[in-house]
View 1 (spheres, rainbow, N blue to C red):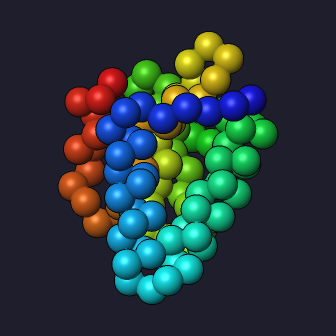
View 2 (cartoon, helix red, strand yellow):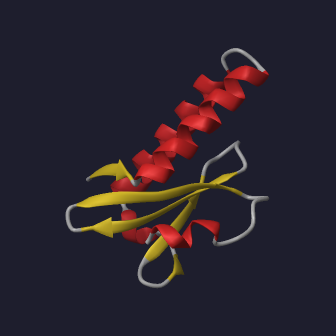
Length: 97
């Protein structure tokens, strides 16, 4: 299964990459690698992870980084709705649904 980003999720994902790369060269690449591993697991078995919000929005934590990937199944693909920081106000991304 493949995935795609909602527009706002793509922007925040790229902001995370830029932030980490600014903090330390190479850290942005580590974040991207962790994100890719996380999405490979989600794509392999998208229904494995628990529903976080109705209707069918699931969460997967990016290992080693303080972010959750919030996604839903969209026919034959996975839509990434948010790459949400753990410390940001919960549910800020719900307006994207």
